[in-house]
Length: 147
Image (tube, rainbow, N blue to C red; front, side):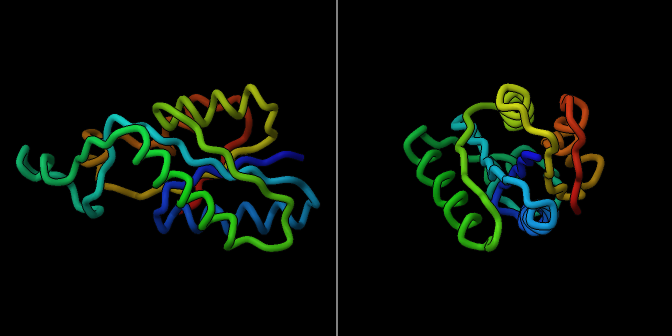
């Protein structure tokens, strides 16, 4: 069995990584840890909903591709260092995370996807979206959502 776990340097993603590693180890399977970078924008604010445009301007940052790749590679390396006893590798993906994750899973023939969920409010989810929800809707293999 080949499993994929998507991470984004959040607590729910860390829990998804731990759970995926535990399941993968128990099944003597392989695990690929992925981090999708979208150089257009990322959220550096907390988990509180964005309440105004100025709040959004302070939390959303545009970065160039080199910075995005460097940050993404650091997230992957850190994640891979935390798991032991599992045949694991990392992969940096590019583009909208839900599309990149599900397309990669399809193209590479993964059997399962693990993803963390932030548990944001409905308002914040409407503004920012939910990668976990979109992955569940797009995936062609079972998805385990870890909160």
